[in-house]
Structure formats: C-alpha cells, structure tokens
Image (cartoon, rainbow, N blue to C red; front, side):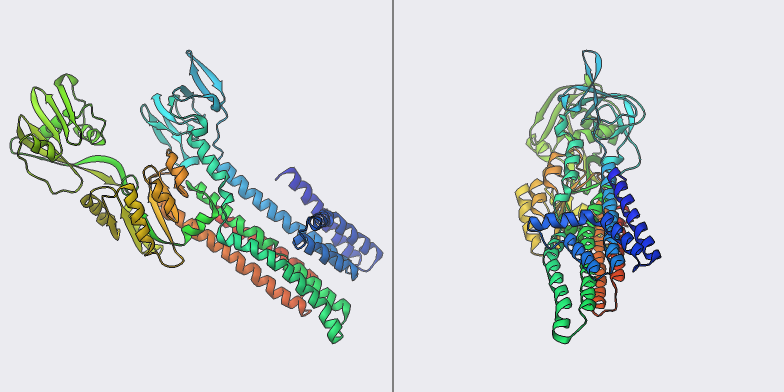
Length: 617
C-alpha cells in the first residue's frame, strides 16, 4: 500500500466515523447535522474539485459530476447523513478499485522484475562492474551465483543451474554448460559462468520482454472499447432520466416535489458506471498478468479476447510440433556391412559438416571420431559428402550422390530424411533420420479439441510424407506441405474461408521463418520465442517455452478472462437497472443505492482479480 493510499484510507475512515457518530447522536439534531457535514466535506472535497475541473474542460457527465449532484441534492432536501454517505462510501469504493488495480500492477511488475542492475565484464584480465548498456557484443561477462544474467550470450566457461521461471514459468532449474545459449533475465544459481555476449542490452531478450509487457495494456479488447463508448452515452442518458423522474410527476401528476427529487437522487447514485468502467480493463490486465506468470506473453487485451474466440488453428511443424533436432531412427546395412560400420563411416565423413543431420550422426555414433582417420573431404552442395575414411572411399548423402557416381542402391520409402552410404564404390546401407515429435504435442492437440476447437491443420515447408507422418501421429485434420513462406500465407488465406463467423484463426510457429504468417493470422503465436527477434516483433502471443501445451493454457486463460468480463458486465448492469427501477418507484433509498453501488464495485473488483490469481485449467 502506498503512502497516498494510506492517507486516503485514513481520511475515508475518519469521514465514516464522523458519519456514524452523527447518526448515533441523531440525524436531525444540530450535532448530527454538523458531524454529517464534516464527514461530507472530509470525504468529498476532492470529488467536488474534480467535478468542477472537468466541467471547466467540457467533461460534464462523469462519475464525479453524478456523485457531486447526488450528494448536494441530498443536503438540499435536508438528508445530511445520506449526502455524506454518498460521498464516503463512493470514496471507499474508489479506494478499493485503486488498491486492487495497484495490486494487479505490482503482481505483474514482480513477475517481470527481470531487469539486471549491473554486468560484470572481463576486461584486461580484470572483472569490472558496469551498466548493462555499456557492454558490447562479443565481450565476456562473469555471472556469479545469485546474480541475474544481464545479456544474451553463449557460455564459454562454467557449468551451473539457472532459474528461468521469470521468463518461462518453468519452476525446475535448467542446466547451462559450455556451448549452451544463456538468456538474459535468468538467475544463476550454483556456480560462476563466463558468457560471451551475442547482443547489446537494448536488443537482449530481457529488454524486449519488458518492452512487450509494459506496452501490452495499450491494445484494448473490443469489450473494453465498447464499455468506454457505452459510458459516454449512458451517463448523460441517466442524468436526463433522473431529471425526468424529478420533474414530470410533480408537474403533471401533482406529486410531492421533495419525494420525487429524493427518488431522482437515488437514481443518480446507483447509475454511476465507475465499477463497470474500471473492472473490465482490470480483468484483461489481470489476465495478461496471469499469462505472464505461466510463461506466456500477450501483447494486449484484444489478442486475449481473440484467443478466446479461436475456431481454427494452423501449426508450423519444425520447432513447433517437433523438436527441430534430427535423430537417427533406423540403420539398414547391406549384407556386407554392420550397423556399427555404417554409422561410423557416415559420422566420420560428416565430421566437419555444420548441418543438423551431421550432428545427429555424431550423436548416434556415441563417441568421437579420430580426425587422423579422415582426409580429402569434399562437400557437394545439395548432394552430400565424399571423403577418405581409414583409406576407404566413402560417399554419404542423398540418393542423387550415389546415382551421379554410378552406384546402385536400395531406394527407401520412409518418411523423413534418408542418408545413403557407399564404400569403395559399393552400396553399404542407409540411415533414416527424422525430427522427433515433442513429448506433449499429442496431448496438446487432444486438449485443444476438448476446448471445442474442431479444425487443426499443419502448414509445413517439409516433405509431404514427413509432414503427414507427424500430423497423423498427433491427430491433426489436414496438412499442407512443401510450402515456401509465401505459400504459407496463401494457405492461411484459404483457411480463413473455413473459419466460422465470429471466430478467429490462430497460427502457431517458431517465430523465425514464419513472421509473414504470424502477422497475417488473427492471432500469431510464437513457440519458444525467448531468443527470437522475429517472435517478439511478429507474434501477438509468445509462449516462452517449447511446449505446445502452453497454447492450451493460453486459450484457457483467455476464455476465463473474457468470461469474468461478461460476468462483471451482467452483474453491474443487472443490479444497477434493478435498483434504479426500485429507486424511481420509491422503494429503494439513497442508502440502498450507495451500498448497492459500492457492493457491485467491490464484487466486480474481486471477480476481476480471479483473472490474475485464478486456476485456469
């Protein structure tokens, strides 16, 4: 609680104490009237000031105007205690709204409190503590246990566990060791690391994430914009209706002037739209905070709203549904060779290749190749590698490589990538390599269907056989394969025609080569985008880990948040309309109007807070 909030609360409590004392001494007695007026002045001076200030600026019909007119009207008809109650309890409701909003902002601030205060840079053999903005790309930074990694980079020395929860929502520490990428904003836990920076601070993950979250409130959902427009029409309308309630019955039907004026004032108090106007954006702000807590960054309430209305989802394959890491699936030797010989020749020939397939061959071999056993390596673009391995002439690559060298071979029908191996001019065998499907991809697709999403498709640049194998295994409805980036945009445009009315089309990609499609979709979702500039810039939602299941969580949060918004709308409008009718009929008093207004505001605030702290499963 801030100092200002404490002072305001003390003032409101003092006003309520004076009000209660005045009622206890008797509302019609001199002491009761004086105490009620003191309570009115203590609680309401700033509301009256704001009403006068806004009127001078042409902003007449707002909640300050409503409360000022209603409270002065009550005093005019000598209902002093009720006039003071209007101001006191209105201020109490406003204080709760401000306090709740502050809690939401503080919660989000705590969740993204990842900005590093300093960086330890190794310069001239000494460690210097500098501002992160002063560190240049390629410098070595030293991160000790307990310190936050200030910039993105590659670990060059050390091995440690790091806490990535602030960025990914993942509570289990991740291991960093030499050669691994280090993401800024994470906390080093167990041992000192030396990291060679790959970005400057203003381009680092931590800075991009902070900028994204800090600007997320600027993008309003449709329902937020509707409520803002609604309030502009609603407030002058109820003021006009209150005037009619005060004037028509006495003038046309001979009603008691003071009685109908009292009813009009009751009508004004309950009509104040502040609870409605405040609680709706608070719901979306809380939803964005709840998503951040789960490792999901949403750029605005409008994207959260569209995510709740999803009808069709299109997925990229590599890096989204699959791990993006090739693995050896099968080794099929000819009669003259063993599996061990085939994988050795292939791994040795590809020893110096930077292609991911070469990495998978090294991992499958399970040991280091003696470089002295390999020479005369020749890489042929688009075909493969030719090399001498232990004085044997070895060809490793696509079928085209063997065909161009006049070597007969057994053609494979497997999906994925097939590496053919020939030794000394004879076919030796083949190796099937495929990208591994992510562990939770199948369960995520199943959960999406349980959320009511009936059309789930894949847009992939991979071979049709490979894409279809993955889609069939995890349960997708359709596949468009062998697509270039521009073809993906065309495919997405065709999918728009199948999206049900009022629903949205979501595209999920890795955020690197899918930027055009991410931007074209109603909601672009970047998978595992904490290290990708393209993900931060092109996507509307960024899932901070590589788990497809995070998409399910994002949609659950979106649906829960929009549900909370409509609950607040129905509750606020329903209660206000009911009490306005009762007030106009003379059944509800100013006291009932005050408590109904504050009560509705308080319930709406509590309900909105569920979008930050609630369980979204």
